[in-house]
Length: 54
Image (cartoon, rainbow, N blue to C red; front, side, top):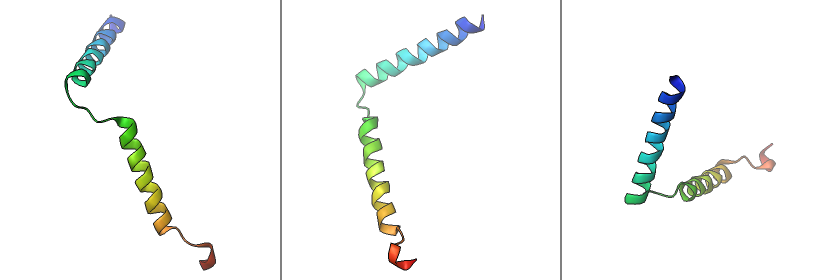
């Protein structure tokens, strides 16, 4: 019984996600991840200790 109940909620969530993605303007996750990775690299380069200080 647990397998069917779990599968039901999984399919319900998946179908709701597909509906939302098709009918609303959702942000592209890959583009957001690339933007945050670029910002993190810039911050890391800004605050990195130089090798001359050691």
